[in-house]
Image (cartoon, rainbow, N blue to C red; front, side, top):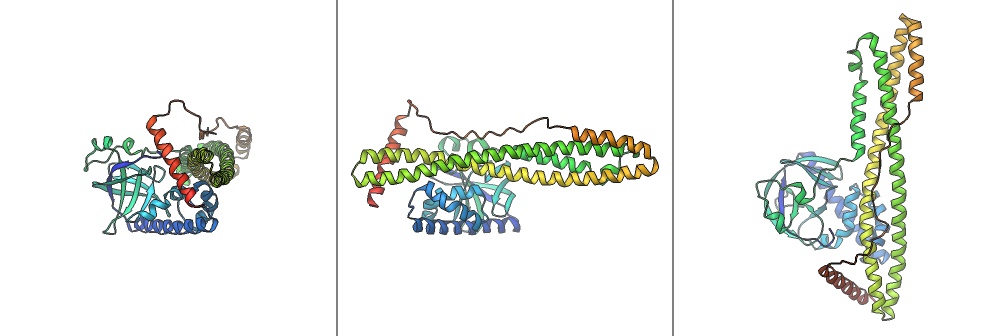
Amino acid sequence: MAGSTYDQAVRYRLLLSPEARDAIEATFADYALMMDMLDEIAAGKGIGANLVTLHGHAYDPIRKATRLPSRLVTLGLRDRAAYRAASNPRLPLDDRLVNVRNAGMLSLGTARGRFAIPFEVTGYVAGWPHATPAQLVRTDEDDFEVHFGVTATSHARLSPTVSPRKDHVMLAEHAPAPDTLLSRAGRLIAGIAYGAIEKAEDKNRVALVSQAIREIEQAERESRESLSHARAEEYRLNARRAEIERETTVLAEQIRVAIVEHRDDLARAGIARQMDLEAQFEVLSKAIDENAERIDAVLTTLRAILSSLQDAQARLAELEHSEALADQPKATSRKGPDAGLAKAARASRVIARATGVPEGIPPSPDIDELSKLKRDKDIVERLARLKSQN
């Protein structure tokens, strides 16, 4: 979406509960703090507009100093100049931070977690000349709105009284695999609740809990496999980001030397490569954020599963003890096979993880002429700015 512009935006006025309003206020406050930190870090390190270097120095301190979602921090690094130039407070949003659930409800990520918020569509406002598909805006009446950018093509299909279709504003619901695993864990936990067990006939209770334990142990194995895949992906993504950061640092110095030596041809080539690296870095940053959310979800699932497994095992021990008092041989014969089966069970599937981040940007012989002119113009403008700083 780099370079995209939106002619107009559809206004969603948020109908906020006190808790949701406080969360949004906290998000605006933390975002303002992040912008102050970025200004301070950029000035102190002499970074200027180098996004990759700024990310390397600022991302972790900002995550520690604020409660902002990781994706909002990543968007904010690119948003700094536009934020300072904006006439009213607003935050950039994408489909990781906001999505439309139905004709009257959306989901919004904040500094205090995600909230389901009712809304009403109130019309249109002017769009914006950058790629972020949505914005969270504070109005003059001290209310809050989400503005979804639309192009001239999609605007012709929309009515101010009807919610825009998700494919027009790129807000398709996402359902990562860990959420499915967490939902499944919830069903397993509910299955071993005391009320559910008590409804079973006496002779079926031990078998019911034993089966629940086997299913929970299977879910535990799947969670651990999912976590190992996500950790491996985390290592690969971070390693590639470190490579880009190192190359960008070397490239910035090479461009500076080329400018000092009046080799504009070399400086333009360096800037072109710098822009390619920044495009890769943006993709990597989003993938890293998504993978971090996946790891958090799997860890939450695993903790819930381990807790429910302890409860199920304790419940099974109680039932077996009560049956042993009435009929010791029967309890003994039942316990052995169940324990052996639980130990012998193995994982039946592995949850696939594939972020698909490219290792590089392949050259294309069929570059659109307009895109080429825009790229050349961007290179010339960046070269001029770098020259003015020397």
